[in-house]
Image 1 (tube, rainbow, N blue to C red):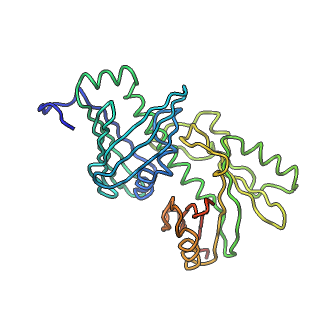
Image 2: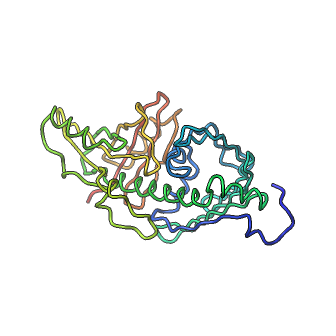
Image 3: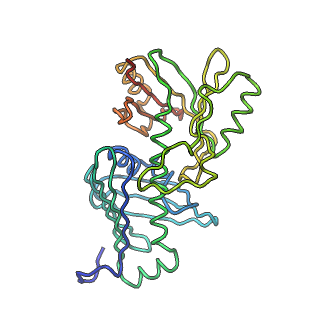
Length: 308
């Protein structure tokens, strides 16, 4: 991107910094995996279709942002620098043109993010801020990332584990989990294991925007035994958290093997030829966890925790 030879760029740049309550490995994963980034990218109310995302130097990133007013916005960028897990630089080559640099700094089990956008000219910067409110949009985008990370962490922490291997089905709803599970309960009977846990029960985190009263009532985790002791689990995945539930891909088969070795075997075998959405790895909450869509389009999660 060619810019004027002027060392002072303050009149054509936007930046925001935030301490994320998530480890750097997870932050990098949701930033560079198209299955994750499509769920939180953009200002409030926007959703995304990712056409191509090659996270490598000179790799192409093409996607369409769908505005809440029904207008589609085509975007194309080229990655200029990829330094895992510390730095991403990409050039947005469709109008408006700008250079984005995002740095990630680990601070214990948290991650400090600095997000910087440099526009091609002062005039273009002023037009984008005036027309599209790019400065406010960037803040909303960071808010959505923060909510998405917290939801990813809290949902995975809720996966019940014990010494006995088991299989369950994990469902996502766009805010109707309680209604759906009350319906299932009326059909199968029984009680919810451990009651109902809501997002409002999550302790407030430093730097994380507060939840609305409506979002606090949403379901964080719920379990219902059905036939033969089989467990249905679920969580709400609302668009206010940067998520979008699509019918057909809003459920996972959740495997809880009884050993680390079996967890890896199942992950490697079932994910072969498919699309890994979270690499199998040790998570900071103590689980050996991964997720993927197999080559037939079925979503899976594997989750193992050593129980004393």
